[in-house]
Image (cartoon, rainbow over all chains, first blue to last red; front, side, top):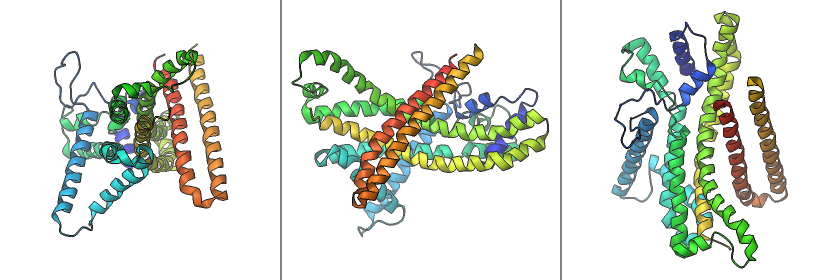
Length: 311
Length: 74
C-alpha cells in the first residue's frame, strides 16, 4: 500500500500543473492501458494485436503456473515414496478440494474424471491471476526506477506502469473464460445425452403447447445469461476491489488540494486512507479466493445441470 | 440535468445495496438458525446456501455494472 501511495504521489507530482483528477487516475490504474502497449504490433483483420499490460499478465500467470505445476508433478513422479513433500502437498490439497467438493457433488461420479481437469485449470488460473493482481509488483518497480534506475520516459519500465495488473479484471479475459464454460456445457450435454437430446433437454417435455412459446425463449436466454453473469461477476469483483483501494488513497490528494496544505493530506492518509486501504486489501484476499471458487463452482454446477437434466 | 443524471445512478446504487444486503442477510440468518438447530448438517447447509448466494451476488454485480455504465456513457 505504501508503494501505491508513493507511486500515486509520483504521478501527482508529474502532473502538478493540472488539478488532481481522482476518476482519471483510478481508471488509468485498473484499465488495460490500450494507449500504451508494451509491444506495438500492426492490426490484423481490424483487430489490434498489440501486447498490452493485461496480455503480459496473462502470459506471466500462464507460464508461471505451467512451470510450477509441471515441475512439482515431475518431481513427485520421480521420487520413490508415494507420500508427497513440500509444495506438492499444497497442490495435492487443491486438486483434491476441487475434485471432491466442487466437481463430484455437481457433475456426479461417472463424469468426474472427464471434467476435473477443466475445472481445475480454471481454478488455478483464476486464483493465480487474481492473486498476482493484488501484489503491487510494477509499482515497486516504478519506485525503483524513479529513485535508482532513472530510465527515459519511453523505456519499457515506464510503459509497464500504465494499466492494472489483474488480468481477470478485464472483461475480455473473463468473457473468454466464460465462453469456454459455455462450450463445455454444450459438450457435456452432448457427451451425456447425444447432441440432439441435449437441446431437447433444455425444456421439460410433456407440457401443454402454449407453455413452450413462453418457455423456449426463456431457456435460450438463460443459456446466454449464465456465461454473461460469470463474466461480469469475476471482472467486476476484481475491478471493484482495486477501485475501492484507490478511491481511499486518492483522499490524500483530494484533501491536499482542497486545503492547499500537504500536512492535511498526510494526516488524512495516516488516519483514514491507509488503515482502511489495508483493511480492504485484507478483504480483497478473501474475495480473490472466493471468486476463483465461485467461478469454478458455477461452471461445475452448469455442466452438472446439462448432464443431469431432470426434465 | 447533469446533476440529475448522477443522482439517478447514486440512487440506483443505494437501492442495489439495500436489496443485496436484505437478501444476503436472510441467507445468513436462515443458515445460522438451521446450523444451530442441526450442527451435524453444517456442511450440507453451507453447500446449499452457497450457490443461491453467489447467484444473488451476480445479480447485484450486474446491476452495479449497469450503474457504472450509466455514469460512464452519459
